[in-house]
Length: 232
Length: 108
Image 1 (spheres, rainbow over the protein chains, first blue to last red):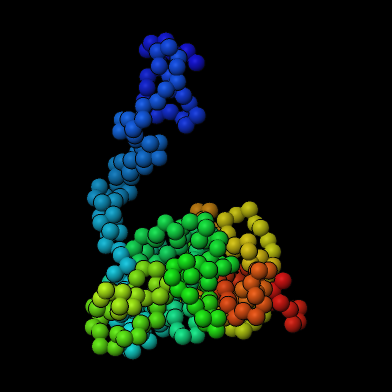
Image 2: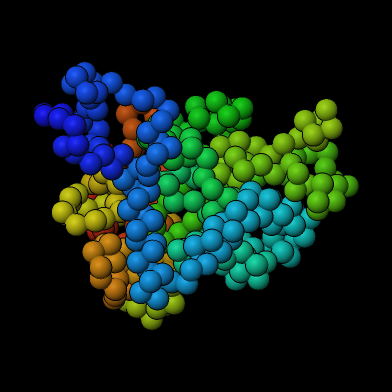
């Protein structure tokens, strides 16, 4: 590669295998600087596509910002509120299990990609645990963004063959006589698990109960928190 | 989502089925680890747009019946204790399953 002065115009972007050289042809880099002076190729592409979509009138200039704002309202607190209500209100529990899409829509949670929601209830006999082996399907409107471990190859491959070991790593050691049902999601459906209501919470309010319902317990890899862990 | 309940269904809850052992070149969401494995239909869960054609700019029509199918973990994995009652549930499009004609079969 020639490196005569002025021979190339540096856009700041270069393929990963390209080597940046100084005036004498010695390769070197500028740690921590490159990211600041230029967009990565993907970010630049995304920005260009966004500008084109707005320019052609496909989307409004504020649509993306509004979508991001909507997404940031998605959190496990949404699912936890539904679970807590199901714990104290038998009729709501029944409706949520029998007609989850309508019930969840009425609660104001908009489904992702139009996918159906299925609600599964853990009992003394059955423990459900959710995975998406092919990608990372997840009920985002109820649980917020999926955790990195949920998207990891390790979880996706191990969940279907050693679910009890995974639960144990999350602190849940199931009795042998509890039947584990691992549910492998697809693109059309999303699963929400109702964890078992912890003992000693009989007089708790709905809001107090919701504090016990963790994201992981609604994926089914762990149990809901117990009163002592909250009061401690 | 669902709706097309008038759609003819080839399977009912409790049917023994085998997952087709195919690897089409187009997008599909039937994971490898259950192909050619035997399980049972838990239930018909509705008719859905076909994600296999939607992934290739199609409209996903006609809707395809989807079934929740249950597999014994012990049938899927050698290292799983045969006495275990643990299960795998997965929702599959009708064209991915066939009636299991083998009697008294296990998963393998």
